[in-house]
Length: 126
Image 1 (cartoon, rainbow, N blue to C red):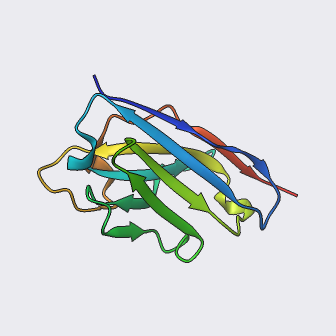
Image 2: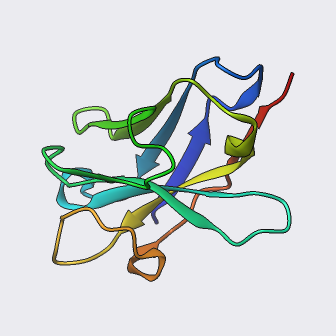
């Protein structure tokens, strides 16, 4: 049974940094691309970042390019999202998910992902 557990959220001021982590169990982690998505109140879930199974390729939403960095540790079955220069519009619940596909490349297509975590709240406010 695949399980994803996110952690690292919190409340910070604009310009601050946070690092989110997602621990995965129940799968051969390195085979699959992983993604981070977020959902703000009243809005649809949106893509944030994705990383290939091997960790060598990435994809980012335009809104976070240059500020967020996705990484993974296949020895530890974790995927992380380093978020710098946070803005109020980054406020959302952040979710990680697995791209269960024969293709281990990153993608922004939400329907490609399965087994979403429970989410971790990130609030950016002064």
